[in-house]
Structure formats: C-alpha cells, structure tokens
Amino acid sequence: MAHVVCTKCNATNRIAEGQAADQGKCGKCSAALFDGHPADLAATMLEKQIARSDIPVLVDVWAPWCGPCRVMGPQFEAAARAAEPAMRFVKLNSDENQDLAGRLGIRGIPTMILFRSGKEVARVSGAMSSADILNWAQSAAR
Image 1 (cartoon, rainbow, N blue to C red):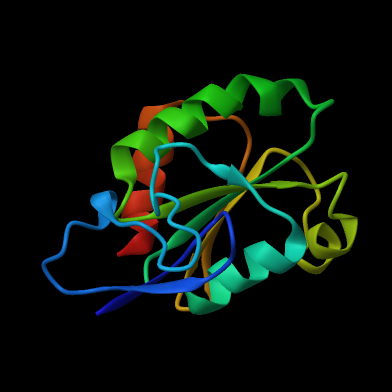
Image 2: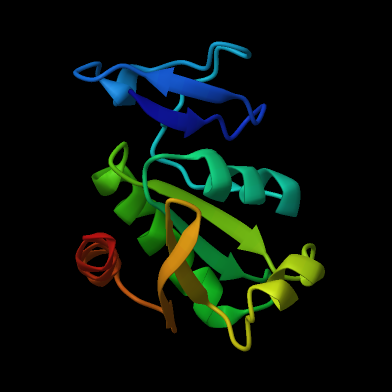
C-alpha cells in the first residue's frame, strides 16, 4: 500500500500493491492522481506532499522572471511524463512562497530538491535537460 497526495485537493490516497497508480483517481475530488504535468503548489500543499507521500517528490523551485527557469519548464514537464507515477514532480514559485523558499535554503534558481520519506535526499541547481533531470533524480532516489 502506497500513499499518494492529490495535487488538486491535498487528500491522501492509498494505492494498493499491484494497482496501476497512473490510472488512479483521488477518492475525494476524483481528479487523476498523475497526469504528466507538474503541479505548481503553494507552500502548505507542497509540505503535505513531502510529508505524506510514499513516493519520492521532486520539487522544481522557480520564478516567472527567471530565464533559465522558463527554459527548464518544458524539460521538467517532459521528465514528469516519463517518470510518473514512480515519482511525483511539483513546482514551487519562489516569489509567491518566499517563506518556504527561505526555509528550504534556496540561494539560486532553478533549484531541484528531491524528497523521500519526508526528508531531503538530494539537491541540484541550474537548468537541465529532461534526460539529465531523469538521470539525476533516479540515481538520487535510490
């Protein structure tokens, strides 16, 4: 049994062993649990994703004015399509969530942070291609 947090309503869902998680729907709001698009989450929703998800959560910390962030956005989305449902991909707008960005120790963007079991396990800064994102995240998640 794995716990997956819905990016739409923040409800924690259980996925039974052997059940196709990529076909799963939220028990509360009926939204797809995985759709290949990283959700742009506010601080409280992101904190619940990190704390309650049994799968690794990869966070892209970005800002709308950041050129490298805009370049990496489509690459991050392509990586999400390839890696979900084994890993959750989400985005955090550092301008709109300055307190959380500060608590996470963000000094430059784009920065990706990989969380597993509620703890940070890896971090990297700078724009990357989708292949590089996947390689880095999958090796760091082991």
